[in-house]
Image (tube, rainbow, N blue to C red; front, side, top):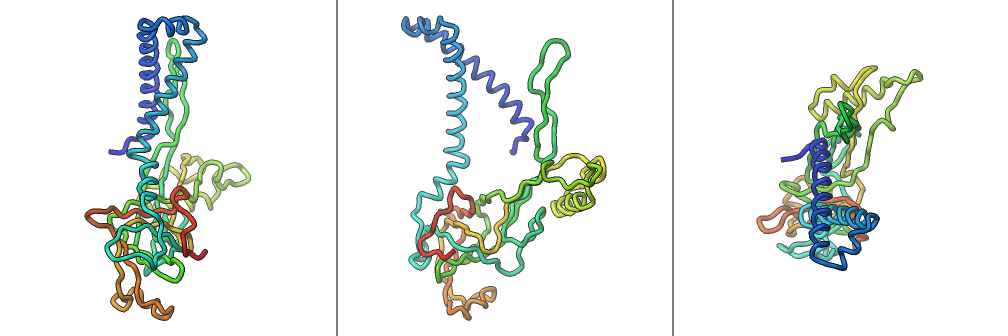
Length: 297
């Protein structure tokens, strides 16, 4: 279950306070057990320094641990467990990591915000929500606005990568995808007329993007429309893409969709797909891209 940004905000606030109090309690307990630490703890500046640094360290450790075992660092580690290979050195049924130039295949996808043709996209629309940051005396409440996800959509279709003089066809079904964010369109990017209101072009962009995302645009177009942010990453023609998965060599003649390759003197391609034992990973993230051996740029 995906947790919204506002819920994460409150979890962060209350979790931070909880860790703060736990570090403080641990400090008092340690002061009772250690004469040396008690002398340090009795100084108020030392005590505040220990509590603040301890709280930040514990929060940082939690964040690093989550990323390492479940998040971004795990994705990077999984990719780099395997040495990158020249595509022509890959063998049937081997788990491989290759990188090459993306070539669109058949009818490409259309990215919802940019409208660009692509083999994959991840698009997120966010709207502003007000959240409480602190509560003072009486009824006074301090708050701030954050971007909260309105809708996220993603899609992929099969594509080809060219590695040197060799080609691989990527079957994207059940893949795990991480796309580098190419576009951020927020209040700093809004197109406005001379009166400071949203221009017709801005309203058109919003309407078309939300329509492609199958979401109502009613609140986000017009003179007094709500703020909205679009973030999008796409896998486009010609960019470098890294793939990790199991593959095998197949004859080009067996696939009608590859009928353009024989004219390039290519009779076999390496087909990479998801398998029971090995998850297929695809990414154009700078975290996993390298200068692939034998890749032409």
